[in-house]
Amino acid sequence: MEQMSLARELETARRAARAAGTAAMRFYGSTLSERKADASPVTAADHAANDVITATIRADFPEDAILSEESADSPERLGARRVWIVDPLDGTKEFLAQNGEFSVLIGLVVDGEPVLGVVYLPAVEVMYAAARGAGAWVDQAGERRRLTRTEAVASAGIRLVGSRSHADPFLVRMQEALGITDVAPCGSVGVKCSRIVDGDRQLYVHPVAHLKEWDTCAPEVILTEAGDRVTDCLGEPLRYNKPVPVQPHGIFAATPAVHAAVKDRVAQMYREAFPHQLD
Image (cartoon, rainbow, N blue to C red; front, side):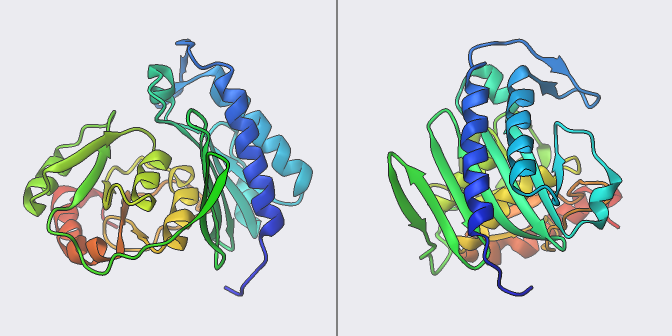
């Protein structure tokens, strides 16, 4: 893909994410929720954040398509070159638990390739942003800092960021096989990936087939622009703007040396554990 300027898109995404976070936080402390068809919770905060994001994007880029967790999907997006992929409140369970581990995720794909991502953590007012070829940055406490990866080799002890709300026997077996003892339970995908780009964690693996494109799009751009690696659990690239917007083989995100060191073992274990999910 040719180099493109995404400065205007990035400004829109930053503004939308921050406004969505503000809208969501008006409901922080409420435990009222409903259940969607897949039994996952949805709150007034999800809807308020979604309304802000979609309205902002449509005002600035009316020709672009939007795929959002909290909006009805349209097959028309499949014919669009540019599709914004949005999770207005990633980590609704954490929002309801009031533990701060939730995020706003806004990504953009062009011709199916992820090119822009913003991850905003409203509870702590920290924003991660990246555009393809322009690098990744974090805004925190009034300062903007570039995110870069300096790791050269895998450390002796891998630090894993795990799920707080989705226990998985596969991950337990993987931890044992790789000798991982340092595991930090954490909330949303956006927060997990922020722990990697911040240097606190080195590995995140989520093998379930119900992971969606809006969970991975924005974090992938930030991780890769910071110098990290993101694939599915088979080591293949994640795909976007598919007719069914799932990531059928989950996500495998890591620092470069850790990804290289464990990718074959993770893929082997995944194939053995989930043969029914293989194409």
